Image 1 (cartoon, rainbow over the protein chains, first blue to last red):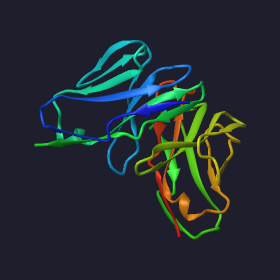
Image 2: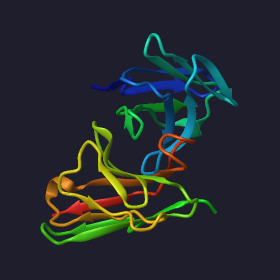
Image 3: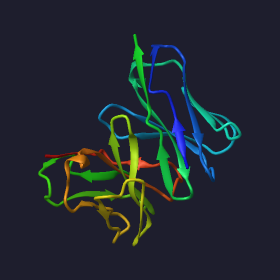
Image 4: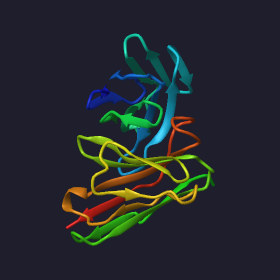
Length: 109
Length: 113
């Protein structure tokens, strides 16, 4: 089977750093995705990790450890517009993408 | 502009009245998929298509049909909608399965009364 777990909610302060964790169990691993979804809008692609380690993309970085079934999304210099849900997703086999239930991040001034 | 277009954005219908939600992409993507999103359950895959004339069930296919007669279009059909199909629906596409991340449509909020 396949399971993806992430915290339901997190809060942080503008300008701070926040780390959103994701653990997964899957057979036939083919990488891990992160998406951002603002309330009432469509998810947008943030990152894709297939190898272990940290990948940095501006204020956002994503980390993967395949041996531990663990990933995190790191958001630096938080802005109010970063208030959104962050979805972790992993492929099941070669043709299906399974999403976690998402972490709702609220950024306060 | 590269995009996935879904219509309608909002739909209220009655139980049993057949409806179709359209999805079209202009990026020549091979892979297309439908998801529904419900509070506390996240995005769940309904159907997907690896290419023209190739469709397969996702995790929650009951009560839905799809077709992929052309590469750009992937309509979602509810033959006899029921209230438990009230949800937010998203169509998504990618160059191939899992390649390059999905591009999502704007979503269709469906209410079945």
